[in-house]
Structures are given as C-alpha cells and as structure tokens.
Length: 244
Ligand code: HPA
Image (cartoon, rainbow, N blue to C red; front, side):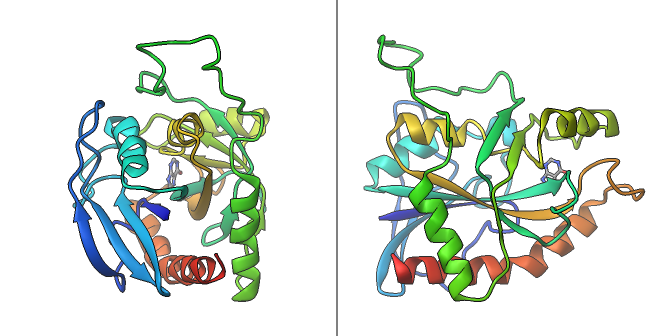
C-alpha cells in the first residue's frame, strides 16, 4: 500500500473515500494524526497529514520517527512525501512541480534516526541517492500521462524553520548547490530509508526563496500559490495510483 504524507496545502486529501482510520501508537510516540486508509482508483492508499489534522505541528516538532514507524505498522510499502518549497535557482519558480533527486540537510536537534538506542555496526544506511529511483520515475511517468509539466531532479535543502530564511542563507544554499528550500524533507527521507520504505518527494514551489526576487515573502502569497497548485498534485497522485 502506498502512503501519501501531505504537507502545507495538503492537510486534507478531499475526494478520498475513507474506509478506515488507524489511531496508532509507536515506541517513538504518536504520529502527527490518525492514519486514514482510503480507496482511490480502486486501490488502498494511506494518508497522513505531516503537520497534524489542523496544521498545528511546527516542522521541527513533527515526530518524524512516529510517522514513519506508524505507516510501516499500518502495512505501507512505499511513501510519497508532498512538500511545499521555496525556489532558489532559476528553473524553480512559483507553481513549478518538481521531483527532487538530492538533499542537503541543514536541520538540527531533530530525532532523526531509529538507531539511537540499540546501535549496530550495519546501521549506517546508504543514502547516496536519497530518493527511490523507481518511485521517482513513476511520478514523472504519471505527470507525462496527464500532460503536467514537472522537473526531473533538484537538490532539496532542508532547513530548520519555522522562520523563513535570510537572503544570505539562501545565497549560501545556492552556492552549496541547493535548488529548493523546505522545512520537512529531513529526516523524513532518511527515516524512510532506515525503515526500508521506498520514498520519493513531490515538491511544489510556493514562492521564490528569500532574496531571490525583490519582493518580501508573505504567507498570503505562498498560500495562494499552493491552493492554486493543489489540484495538479491531486491529479498527479490519482494518475500515479492508477498506473501503480
Ligand atoms: N523556505 C523554507 N520553506 C519553505 C519555503 C521557503 O521559502 N516556501 C515553502 N516552504
């Protein structure tokens, strides 16, 4: 079963026919919300809003370990993390859809591994390519089937939040090779890898990152771009599930 972890702009997945709600506990605490099991295109799909049902959990407070563990417990076998991001480099302007292929992690002080307590020598996961190649390709194929334009590949810079960045921080991230900036891509991706769950990210650019355009960032503008783009994301996910 596929899971969708919804982010900003996708707290609810309207149109899903929910058949079950799983209120799961884990050794790491509670996930962000009960997991909804729904039917889409005749297939079961799990949905979990990353920031909680009412979007009340800040990016650094999300219990990423509980979320991934609970999904695994629910029988999930692959995950698509939907993410709103800021665009840093020129191709990645507002409203663009992206399937990133790399990550630079600037987050700190987050519980970021399942292997803290009982560490074993073979617990160093390979993370050369942080996203699952097959899932990425399937997302790109689904976009093509629906004639949706989408960019294949980008380096996602994961930041702590919840504040947005300074112009100098974005300049540094650009120098580092980041194309996108977001607050929730890590440790979600690496925990999925630790849990042996194939994971890919579907990112939607909500705004130019700080200092990239002369305008200051407003949440109203960001939210407007996200609500305009969410239809395409749902379309793409429905197509993805149909092709699964
Ligand atoms: N920075 C960090 N996270 C974000 C942004 C941004 O500009 N836009 C959407 N999520």
